Image (cartoon, rainbow, N blue to C red; front, side, top):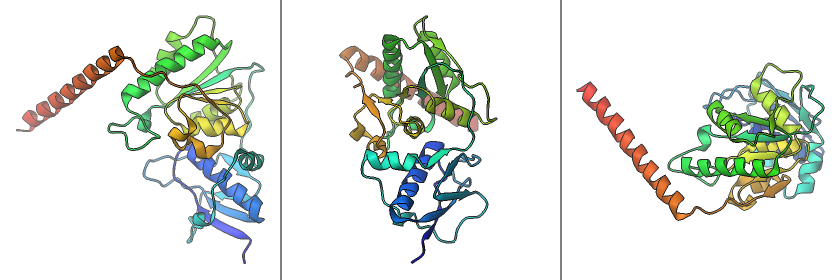
Length: 274
């Protein structure tokens, strides 16, 4: 029996790739194996990154896809102790210099996580995202960390959050040195914070950044409400409050207005073509 396995990795975002590497690394530790891993930049979502991680038992390359993919032989971790064992063998490939200050991190995830209709529990509609956003701001203002690092895939929401923060909270960029890749810099800075607020229903980016240094990640939903449960992260759950009748009415009105706007735009496009 060979002591080497070959795996073609997920062509996904950084969080999903790291989760897969951690899973493979633990499998290799458990079974005394090594792995040859293809870092796939040819997926349908155009998520192309240089190799960002290095592992003890997994050799990563991005040149040639393997003729076989043995990922189905790799089991899932079943508890937090296993995740802690795996993460000791995985690290970010390029250490960066940071300011000597303790700060809290926030990851605002929008993009493809906002869907209508919502396909499954890791996603959210715009109304739920807006509730999460407002509650994140409220919790941060209650906690009042001295320094706060914010990263997002949407500058509009990042700037909106900054405008709503308590005046005593200082928003910082803790990195002294940069990698030249914004997504790596954001991930690294998050991983060095003392706690991460996940401003989204689910974000593997925020979750895996917290796992790297065993720091808490704040979720506004129970771990069983999404795939968060399978990461065995250090999770602090702060339950999102239920909507009151006024909020429900307002969101219903805005939904109707958005639907009317879409119908109007489609009708205008139709009449332009005829």
